[in-house]
Image (cartoon, rainbow, N blue to C red; front, side, top):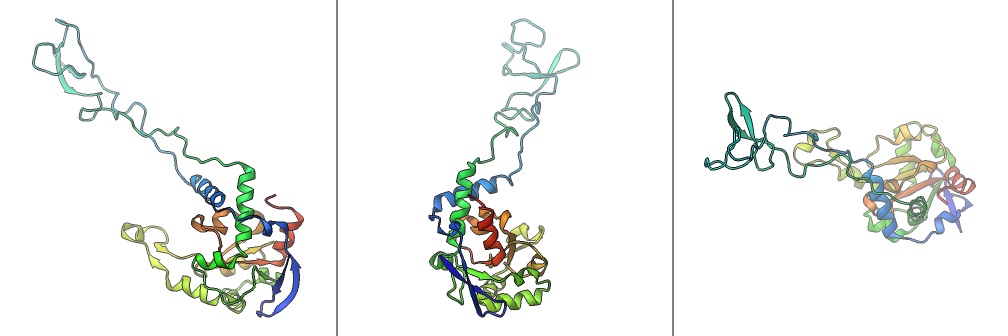
Length: 267
């Protein structure tokens, strides 16, 4: 299988052979599973202090005629705190008491990471890579395509771009103009108190640029709305299929294609 390389001015160049990763079967279920597994690593363990509600003097005296016993006194038989002169105070320790322990508190040792086999993960990444050349899947995600080149492959000069203005101009010439406008126009503030957090905005995903080596393109494209840059050996399912939905608008550089084939990545 071959694909046409686009030059930075948008004109057609020579052809390049696509590696076997682009011929992988599309498995939506595996892509979603690998995506959820990656997202689970962002969860933070949480739990209560094990001795919460138990560090007090409360104790239950149940033996009849014993010191501080509450049998036949009109009081419930529950642990009560000890106060001077042999008297009993508030009910503590039990879950239904004020300031008592929780019956089933969250535990930090709970398993919150969703494990996935390495072969399954690599298969999911290969499947997401193959989905980047399926025009129907790309349009189903909401991306707007100007050209019909699938997949989009750029020459290596794209990796050395260091100006945001130049990077934006090149992407527009390669057919990503409408999709970048869509991401910019649909950028909106997060709702409620979330708008006060870092960023405070929701930005739709636009073009993903996959490079063999970063020579300045990351700094040039990081401020473009919805545009991401990633090295081919660091690809994740979350980059290729945001939200677990495969078919992201992806532009590959020629060196990324060669590195994918030479090093047999994700095989």
